[in-house]
Image 1 (cartoon, rainbow, N blue to C red):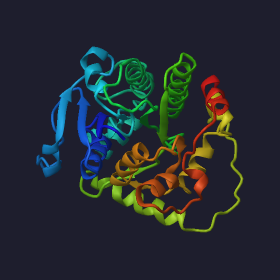
Image 2 (cartoon, helix red, strand yellow; image 1 turned 30 degrees about the vertical axis):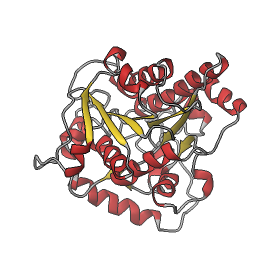
Image 3 (cartoon, rainbow, N blue to C red; image 1 turned 90 degrees about the vertical axis):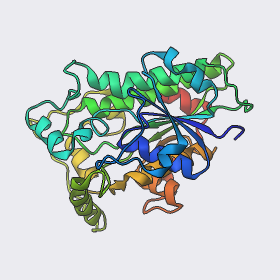
Image 4 (cartoon, helix red, strand yellow; image 1 turned 180 degrees about the vertical axis):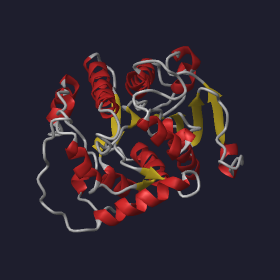
Length: 321
């Protein structure tokens, strides 16, 4: 890579800070773009030593002029902004669960606007990807620059609204479409990677996430039982084409996957994002076990769970979904 400079959108958040830390450890020049522009600090109010090696800049995903010049000097972008895992969890797990019990799961607790899933999970990523594509690169590499989008595994329905995972999948398809359109217009496109973690935990930053993570991890080591997935009348199947295409129309299928999906330490996801930037062969969706493989060179799953290079025909198929 010609220029070792990465922009992390949402770099001061729970996951974004893990990406920044991992990128600093790999020797990258790291730029965090967030609404406040303030450095990450621990729950105790401390700024870890690595934060001094990050440029913390204020920016809004929906105001390209606030960050377009920054992206021109970057060889890669990692987008970590989102609701539920990256916004509701900022108030802690009890507040997140309280919000769900009050049927506020489809809203950002920091705003009361409708359509927050669409705006934060999908539209913010598309805005940044579009700006990254349209901004002339000042790096010397003529190849497609990496754009790493932190998506999600479909394991949280029906606890949270389906729009959470639907907008994540819409963002993936939209980014793929932008990259393909750029290629068809003579550009280099993007090397788009979609990391799909399930439950993320950290014993110090999110101490209440540790117990459910330990329970889920234990379940993943048990023998898989071929149990049928029932259909319940009060849980209607999803009609979203991106979920039906994955064979995930039944919301209870997400519960079944949750019990087989390893929870991931947030540092594992951060490390995997940086590895995805560096590995030119990685492209497309990367499932939880594949994220483990990217981060640590080994996985409890097979190699098929790590994204692979897609043909132009495969890119076109995803973009058309």
